[in-house]
Length: 223
Image (cartoon, rainbow, N blue to C red; front, side, top):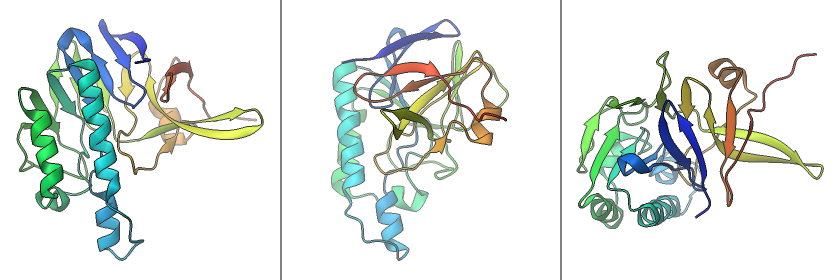
């Protein structure tokens, strides 16, 4: 598997092509913003009648990443489900797949703004988790050595005269913001005022894809 290795506050990490983060010294895989059940929620609210394949695709990638890394610890950084109601009524077959992945693993669900409370599935449910030297939460704060999600960052690139958008990790001297792992999620461009303000001048964007690569974080330019 092609990965991009980097060190963040002394922790040796690897960005995976899928948007997962592997911390080999802690035998840990971190994913963020799966938004399982989003298609079902939109359909139930009178939107497009979307097939319920997004959850299956997301879970398949997670199964593959766990198999490739052999991780025995998992942290899901919030918004794992699109709503708490979706989580409570999650299809039996897909819930069974999650239960199978949890078997023999230390599994932590971090609360998100879409799923702000305990889930009925197994595992530990926390507002945030601290594993020295890092802290894991859903939305970035003022802490240093912080790993978070929420923003679904995407970098806009120009390649061969074409505009492309790629989900990405954002990392500076204080913060690491994860891309969305879900198969059916939007994103916030790195040159948005929100992300341009959040991230330091030294920030890099680690692009996901077949071969993750780090570039200076694309930002808004001023005339």
